[in-house]
Length: 199
Image (cartoon, rainbow, N blue to C red; front, side, top):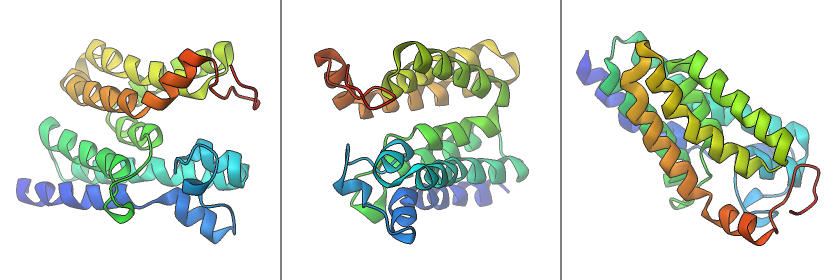
């Protein structure tokens, strides 16, 4: 059975590589997210450049890319290491998609899908961090990074999923790295706020 789950690792990567935002905008006649706004293929940029419905469908698709392979690994009886590898592969697929020349998104939604299956409680707590800081500071990027940074802490504190804390940490580090341009804009006061205004 482990061999089957190991086979899920490359399959999870390929699933994660599917550029949901590009597919959705083409289907709806929207703007290619790589050529508009921030140039990111994720739901936030799709929503800004092609409308809220396209953004919502992109968000759903990106979440499912992370959730489905992890759910399959769990159903097949995989242990924490194998499940973590499958989840990480799906996440890396979104960050480094083979179908887009390894130039992908920031992975927040796909990470949410991965971790929601592993620990709904930790994911809800991290989502609460996102909501609080998005409301207070009105920066999606800042709220995303803080939410990601909180996830490994919550995983570690919840004893039944503590073994997934390294996965949460790896995902958090990669999400923050992918936000390097946002960090520069936050420091410069030029980052877009929720509502369209800059810092």
